[in-house]
Image (cartoon, rainbow, N blue to C red):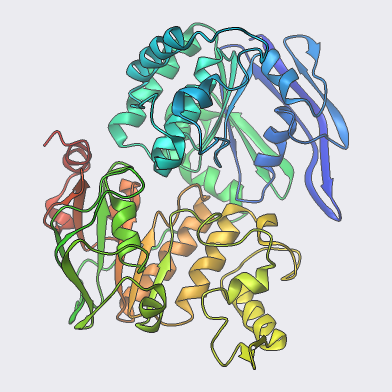
Amino acid sequence: MNPILKLEGITKRFGNLVANDSISLSLNEGEVLALLGENGAGKSTLVSILFGHYIADEGSIEAFGQRLAPGQTKAALNAGIGMVHQHFTLADNLTVLDNILLGTESLLALSSARSEARRKIGDLAQRFGLAADPSAKVGTLSVGEKQRVEILKALYRGARILILDEPTAVLTPQEAQSLFDTLRQLIAEGLSVIFISHKLDEVLAVSDRVAVLRSGKLVAQSNARDTSKASLAALMVGHEVQMPHRDQESQSGAIRLLLKNCSTAPYQGRTGLRDVSLEVRAGEIVAVAGVAGNAQDALANVLSGLIPLSHGSVSVDGHSMRSDPRAWIAANVGRVPEDRQSVGSIGDLSVWENAILERYQEARFSRASLINRGAARAHAQSLVQRFDVRLLSIDAPMRSLSGGNIQKLLLGRVMTEKPALLVVNQPTWGLDIGAVSFIHGELLAARREGAAILLISEDLDEIFALADRIAVMHAGHLSEAKPTVQWTLSAIGLAMAAAA
């Protein structure tokens, strides 16, 4: 094996927090190295140093025999390192084509090879099964569609080392398999991959070698064929992980949520709801599966009071609901939005401020229009303890938390209110197995306590683990919600792709 990338003694500190503690790793030509760890273990910091976003306090990086200049993304790109970020680095006001071309052409060039770029993007999209309209504005795309653009952007630049951070989080099983098939072809031609994923089945299927980080330290390395899903999970969190299981029989009660023939206008340039009908009862979890961009976001926003219906009706506990977020909160509807960073929280506000964000006007948190800081901080501290949110301080800005810890806080923010209806959209996207186990356990506990839960997810393992009934959304239409036992993984994947 020929090492083409070497990281030696990489250490990075943020104040008193040691994010990376003397980490040394190598990557061989034509190898897939999986980088695993809990949210906050130091994975993102390490690859951010590699890609030039951060400068290490100690240590060095060598790519293809040459020392890599620290803190220079351009140097990483010129060295043939490409990165697909978990949190997107796209300009919403530009088209897909412009985003992919951005930085690849001189500002002094008299013309742009846009026609050739369109052809190349089309070829890449077809090979990888990652459909993307080059003329579409990125701001109109769903989370899943933006992920596809990020993958295409890295491939377009011809990277020899590709860092993939949760690349299949929003793909159907068929799309993920297509991506892996193409990656294998590129790897056979010499491409090397650092693969970050919390889907351990994928890690074992795709990777040659596995490296595990915990609390900023490299705690294990092994060949993928010599390890197992259970042992990797234990290495990541420091103890054996038990995934919670849904009771086979649902003790469902009265109808909590009822949608009748609901339609919406096209939403931000995307498909709206088309004659959607659905009921969710107390004590059950109904899952909506679908490929990103098929109006799941419109459904979630209708059920948060953010967009109105153009036709049909929606009610909670028999009361007709209007498009007013305050009315939905007053009806004791909890929501966990798909985009935890931009929609679910405000990054520059503190953790304690985010903890009361949806209820700061209530008497318990405000007096004479002034925030009762003592009550708010006490509430936040109880959420942090109850939902195992790992942070330095409740005064820290929300953006300083890892994705998993942000998600735990958002879930805790609604769960402590004992919601009658809980609408959760991609609740475990990009989270480690420990956080997934925790969140699944909380959702199942809420189900046992009588909450009605609508789960919108593209993770079919999650859907089959949690849902009592499953419906599939495609092009704004929603299928009948059938009992989970009547679906197979293959059938639901084909339905998501409208092949059945």
